[in-house]
Image 1 (cartoon, protein in one colour):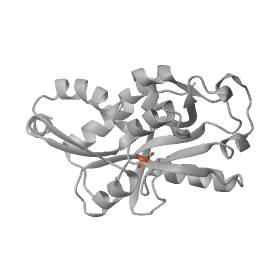
Image 2 (cartoon, rainbow, N blue to C red):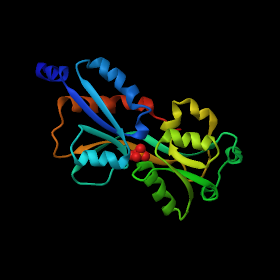
Image 3 (spheres, rainbow, N blue to C red):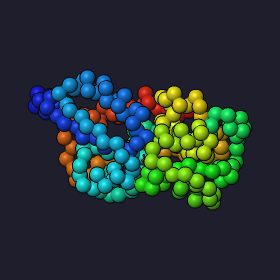
Length: 219
Ligand code: PGA
């Protein structure tokens, strides 16, 4: 309706997303902003735990993350794959091998994200489920810092394939062929059920569901 269009003209869209989405959310925002030039968009990038704190404080319209907590008061929609893969320096001896057992990850120093990271939580649970105790030798607060530390030979890591796909850094890294990997996570958009979404937020959600498959990295 005309009213809807008016709403869209002056809309505001407040998004919050976890760190590993920053490789595709801006790309996806460009055509959205071109379609709706009157909408001003803000995108907050934090880790999983900080994002849930923002949700509890009702700071944003929509929240984008993997593996949200199962809560009755949250509406969640899955929209894209988010595989977590094991990475090593490109010239690492394991890089040439196929069908490696999961235990090989316990024999190498492992680099993980900071406490509060969703990626870290998923990996921890995964190792627990398989009865593996990794040797964590370094915690780093960013995916890019992990890329560099792995390239520099400080250890291996398990990280979202999205952090590699559209970056130069992937040429210096190898994705290891390990049984049980990748860990198959999914991106989801969530918001509190009691919240009435704005026209702008509803429009963005529909746009996201319609266009996000072009950023699939699943092999
Ligand atoms: P992270 O989030 O940036 O906190 O690791 C990842 C996720 O929620 O999948």
